[in-house]
Length: 209
Image (cartoon, rainbow, N blue to C red; front, side):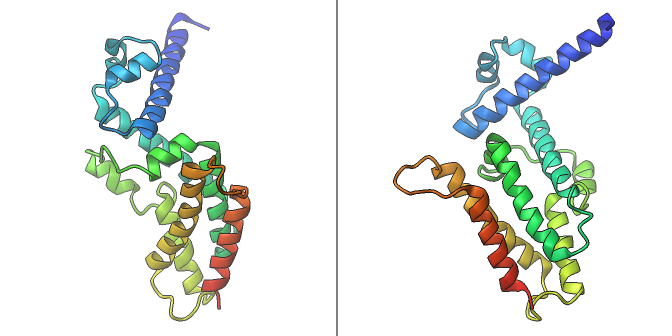
């Protein structure tokens, strides 16, 4: 490995450590409470070193959120080849739960905190929004729209956004309880995957003809 290649790899490793530390701090303490200095302290770097990679906190959190939403979109794309839209909808819910289980801090930052730094690059954001290959919500809406078009849903369900948001809310509710209260010994919490499966199956039956 050459010197240039090694330096690039070291630079990417530092960048990854910064993003991982920031994600955990944002999820735990909230966007306003976290400073670049706190992030630097978490990885035992100087604040100056952080600014070599990110010009400010907003640019850091934007990159963090974009990377995490990309990961979720890729998880959905792995089930995009499922021909049955209702089955695809079920698998989407389970993939969403898998993502939350594997990346709880990602999930907290993405779905359990207000968006701290909306994208400034409106053109880039516009290209992603509504594209099922890059926008997980668009993927969900497209799946529901296909089910409606194929006559698989109840005849009173004609708005794919309404159905998609109801499906999302059901699964998100289960996951949020698990993330926020899953260690609470007062309740005998059942495994998240089992509860999500029950919610997804019940919802699918409820909207089907």
